[in-house]
Image (tube, rainbow, N blue to C red; front, side, top):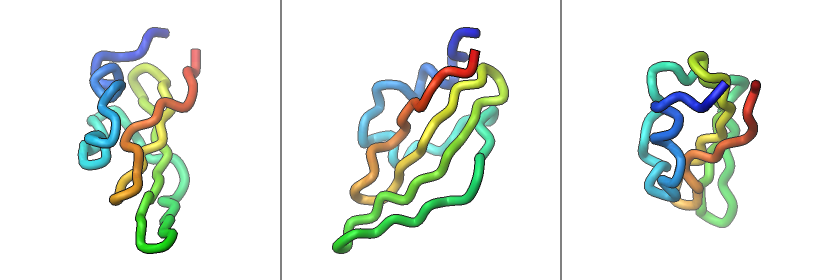
Length: 74
């Protein structure tokens, strides 16, 4: 299955994706991982898209990388 349009919109955002909330079809998987090293935060939450199956890590905080595609579930 191809990546849905809402997931495609998360690709290529880079660190600007840190503040972009999950779209309506993304559901959290597991618990939030609070990460803070030397004052730099990079909290992580896993998500799975109920529309296309794409899996994501969302890294927030001043050291987070934004939306990271993990793997495709075809």
